[in-house]
Image (tube, rainbow, N blue to C red; front, top):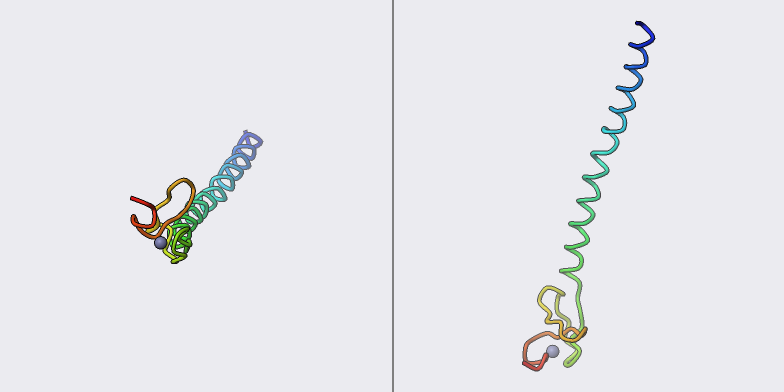
Length: 75
Ligand SMILES: [Zn+2]
């Protein structure tokens, strides 16, 4: 009976450690992804036509090249 209790306690501790160490890790990965997305959006890209630097989210990607405006992209 005591042995069962000890085993149960050890198993419970292992589960607690596993879960306890896992959750912050998942949280940090999610945070890193958010940061990475933020960096990508704020990354400056050079317009392939007029060499103006614009942020990635403001740029227009046509055929794998970044353009600063619709005029440069040829629309
Ligand atoms: Zn341009």
